[in-house]
Length: 136
Image 1 (cartoon, rainbow, N blue to C red):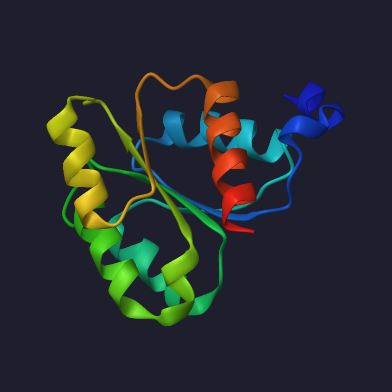
Image 2 (image 1 turned 135 degrees about the vertical axis):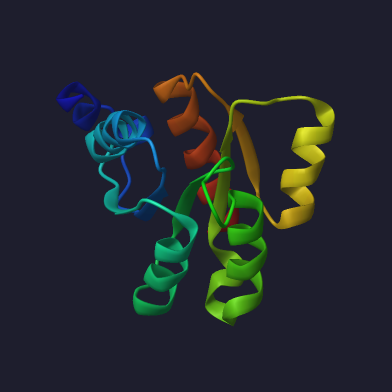
């Protein structure tokens, strides 16, 4: 993914938290994000994500909906209600499901974007960049 570094279209220094319980998926997403300049921290479950949110600020959180225990929908609801600084954090739902109902549930939980697996890394970066520019 080092070739991404030369493409200004994807370049960012966003502080990004990646919440994914699947190690392979987490590694792949981390490579894509870091290739575009994101400063990535990881959480493997919902509780760890909430702990990270109280300890450090971030601009973007990519959160798997199907987390064991505290699912991604509940993580988003709690993040949105925890601290005022998290109100403007870009929350991206990652899901294996993409029906209109699934998208509506994500929006209701506080997500800004709902992406469906398998992920297209460049498309994901495009969408995240667009939303980061809109919120700036």
